[in-house]
Image (tube, rainbow, N blue to C red; front, top):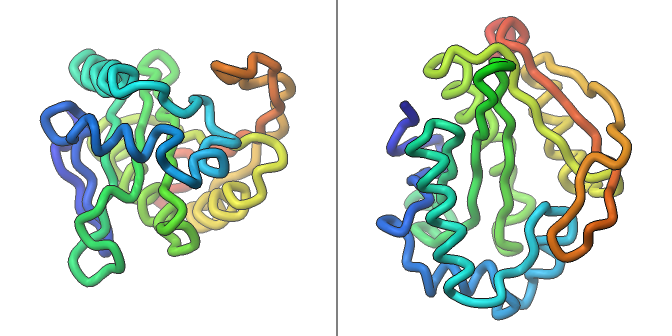
Length: 198
């Protein structure tokens, strides 16, 4: 259903599975061992992993979603010629709601890989999967209110593909450790908008 490997101009995506990822290496990036983890997860829906077992269980959940065609999670690595080529830069995903014919984008990157424009490059590749391969009708993405870095990145690629800001969804997200709900902005790109602007 989902592509096993995706290549863009500067990035390679591989399935986020225990087969492709060393659990202990990934744990280092997803836990408090990563000195920037607080900045990375500040606006994300998950909290830093407490143990390697938690990381392994997360990878198993990603595999399960993949196998049940509920979504595809990928490891993101820069290609040869990029600073940090071959390293794990972060992860991205496309969750699928088949009933609504909608794909939902998500991503996080390690801090050394911020500010390179990878977010838009990744989004364009996953939109192609959503529309060309999965025959979905809409791709959506949200960011927490106040997350200006994500807002700027999302606005760029949504505008590029002719999409729009749908509005502010109040009390939309609640985190694991901090259950207080937060407001989120939602953006969408339709298949027709994407085809006109691809």
